[in-house]
Length: 454
Image (cartoon, rainbow, N blue to C red):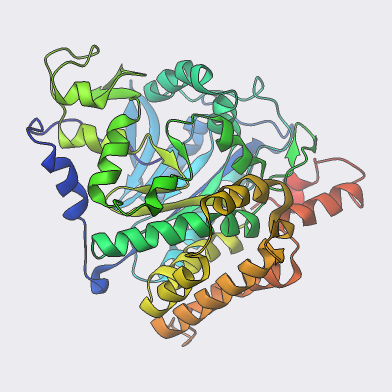
């Protein structure tokens, strides 16, 4: 979830403005950037429990200590709930997951440097507080009831609404962790192609990054339980968006979809007003029950778009949302994968050629089965692993043609070496964890907190 927005601005007077929101975000390739976001669980090293918000070693204390590195606090009701530094933000997910929302950067090298700088900072503070941080797709040990809620108004609204529309929405909020990348688009046609490639191949990313095989101390039957949770969170705002492959796909079609998704809230004067289940279309007409007579601003539209959770999300950029959180090395791999596929025209064409004939039924079957079987998911005469190897190969060639070099004259393909190995072996990170659980760990998940902590 992105950094807090601010309400304000002139009321929207024409639906055309909602389409222009997307159109005005089109950029030439020379201005395309990458923004990497990743979440991780923070835990007490002595008890392995997630940290509460308050207390000498709580999440708020952790945020306070990070201010030594120049981060400025962002408060809600007097409490520090986020930090900002330039175009970067550190925010809190509902269960205390710590998220770095990175700045838009030109290269994967810069994105990886940003991640490493963040790592040094949070490890310094974590060592002083005797807490740990770990990247997994799902909290491996503790129950929903044992997970503390962060004191943010928008989460209170979502907490009350989620059980009305699905059975796993609270688990999504409290116990999942992800890594995602934000990418730019050059035109409506470019957006459409990237959106279609992103949706069709998102199960590949889910499988390659699958890293959530445990629930409450035991195997849960999935390699990406985080991905599975999204299938029973809220059908109105999640999923594969089959209509993206229809002929009328474009900015206006996405706008219509977004208008149909029920609202969560309206942000006014630092407060979140509960509008859960209400209609943005009514808001446009001045008939929103939560704010009768008022009309939305563009800030309200931006806020509303952040409450949509499909596998690929469109805002002023596109978000690829299919991957589990993981270790630091793989955090750089996700932006590398999608930059390789989407920021080189030949690679994008090759990726589209690979998946353009996937049927609706096949796309949805891959979405349903990849969280269970990972790269071993059956597909046509082979497996999803066969597709994954082609996808990674296309991305590697795309990065090679991009030719962005670091100080040691290495191109961005170095960040896909680990992913290429996963694709080649067909063994997901989750299956590696399961082998440890059934072997050296003697059917305990506790060692994950030491062996895989940052």
